[in-house]
Image 1 (tube, rainbow, N blue to C red):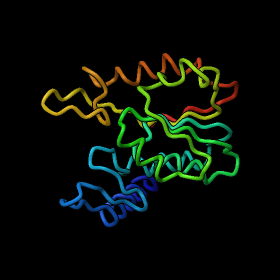
Image 2: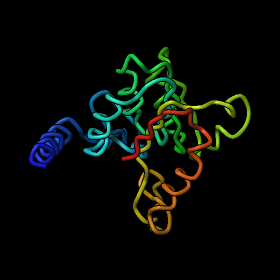
Image 3: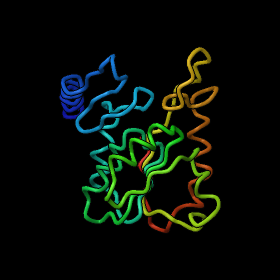
Image 4: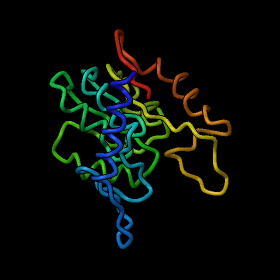
Length: 178
């Protein structure tokens, strides 16, 4: 517990130091993860999840709600990872992902949870690892933000994800949900 608190303080310090926002371009800059302001930028939770992704990702990986692509990039660090599919509901996140991973074994796509995998050539695709840092806050009617709005009560997106995930998994897989 003491180690976790110390690590969290360190991650918070690092994140505050390396993350800045420029007003002119509406872009956020984190360590190598420049994105549009509407894209969820890596924060403390992303960095903690990256530790688990680095350790457990293998085979064919799905980074659900990829945002800036930090988890997809982390998964690629593991030599057991063959290919990463990075899916996000935000078209600007998908565009940033496509630019970032050009020439790498990453496929970036727009998808509302598993919608892109319900038909066509991706229908039979199964994953060895699924990574998801889901939105978990109750919807804010004043300002819609799919990166953090998890439904009326905050858990609906997580529930829908868990109900659908089993039909997209191989045996002996890992779901990293943070």
